[in-house]
Image 1 (tube, rainbow, N blue to C red):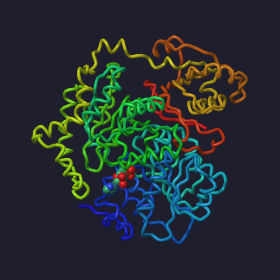
Image 2 (image 1 turned 180 degrees about the vertical axis):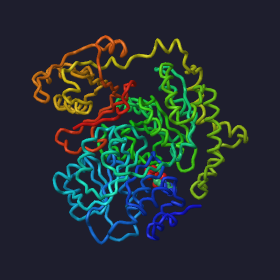
Image 3 (image 1 turned 90 degrees about the vertical axis):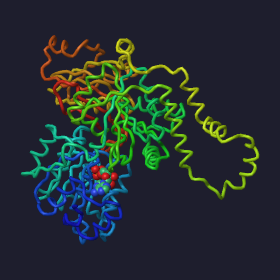
Image 4 (image 1 turned 135 degrees about the horizontal axis):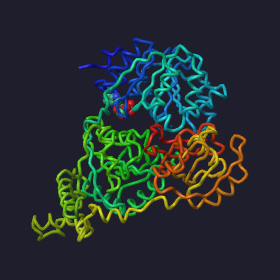
Length: 594
Ligand code: AMP
């Protein structure tokens, strides 16, 4: 059995790891730690969430860092503030026996002066989100000339979020002789380009193609109609009385909506999305971490950085557009040797989404039927019995009341008593599920009922495109700038050669027309017009002969402050999710733009 000491780590670190309960290194740690300690070669590591990658890159850095100097020697870039904070916290824990070791997290949406003070005091390791890191470099506050290690954590995610320019800037500000460590769950073209441009002969390592926990995750799907999605979710929660789960939604609005409904229906649930203030988000996460909350309804971005190891279920209320996001989601369960279930609620129309995911995870989804009322009541009943059986009795506190209680219950035999106690809780389930209907989808009904969610958006034509160096992130930035609002939802974006299309919450249609009227982009007068959506993408292409167009289906999740606000605190950060339009691009993902 491999132990941390064998990997070349000193006692100070090994003792700290023991205190954290790290006994054996994970796959990626076994490979990366000795590699980084023994060689200055750049490293390209394939590692997914939950593989122990944070320790894999930070332990060898801690082993080699020079604590007699306060210069910043390592910079770690991470996509979100939550993840940056988490990494810095992990490093603090790993280095608790190393004197004079300072680690600092820098991220947008927080007081920059405080972070500048931290830098002045000296931090050998800085963990930053890309925007804020660039900001601090520009201000001359973060000095990278002594950097020996640059870590790009979740590189694919950073690029998906539109941080390419920021990454370029940080990479250019670091010395050539540093060691670059790139960790990514996927290696699309953009990540490979970063590796090609900024790394020299990197060693490639992989902890296998799956999450550490992936072996322990089973994948299930339920076929429901769109309108039965929510009732099915409730039944899944009801048939799993001890559920501890993240329910993933695709948009901020949907997240709020589902959480509100669950709360109103008496579930122990709350929402986590980018509309919440940092303090609110911290509070929700804290409640979820300490299990005061059982169900967390969240968007993908908001849930990143939330480090919980023992989720029983991950529920895809709606499947993400990008297959990678499914692996990120499902990888949140089945961790730390525990079994987990990843559930997808799908309509008949969405069935086609399962196959690409199955290919990616190399596992089959198992079809499940939405439980009926009788099954749920049975499960709840036995769970209640187990609870009664296992409950700790507080003899000391209860003893004073017992004589009166016995007195009141006199005359009831054992059987009668059991029935009555159990019925207190059980009756509500029985009455709720009495005459409950079958929620499993009937294909023909399903087709009629599923409603396009596009009704809530207006589609616009804009006379700029790829020729104007427009990309989705820039277009979002431009929309944000003109609308001067940060809570307007954007739908689909299509960037074509000389013009583009975008969708905006229809309540803001007039605003768009009005505010874009006199605007300019790269010295071009802007024309924006309302347009209608073509019936099908294929027809659209053929008819108009659109060469080289990039399509993105937005998940309508634009939020503020999930990540780095970077330079844009004046205007507020605009962020939304994009995902692949499904035809040619692999690079669409969440994007944010200042
Ligand atoms: P990461 O992939 O770095 O986010 O780590 C995922 C989870 O696994 C975190 O909760 C870590 O604290 C935990 N972890 C990482 N390495 C080990 C290890 N060798 N032993 C036990 N837990 C670990």
